[in-house]
Image (cartoon, rainbow, N blue to C red; front, side):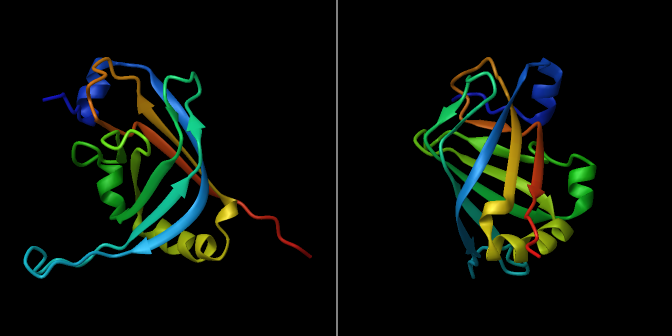
Length: 155
């Protein structure tokens, strides 16, 4: 079984990070509910964005396309770096189209959603992932992310 490192594992290993810029192409908004497994839980809406081809700064990682999932979480979860992948993760189980899960604060998602629902072209996302020595690992924590929305205002 390949090693799936936590953020702490990566930080202790002091490995290099690779930045990847994602270009958004298609937005999907979805929600999941399961009567057997989610009693008492509130559903968590998921924003899924299909992104085009991209490669990391030093071309260690090259992808034909990427599925970017944005999850809204409490700010404290991000601030306190709670869990094995508090900022999100990337998984390579589907090598043709890896999945990147980014955890954003609920407040940011609430502000961002109307903009990206109207026009996805202003969204810019950059993530950094570790250059992990175990190439069999199919799941890595995000080291950092940057999310921007910029749009020229027409007068």
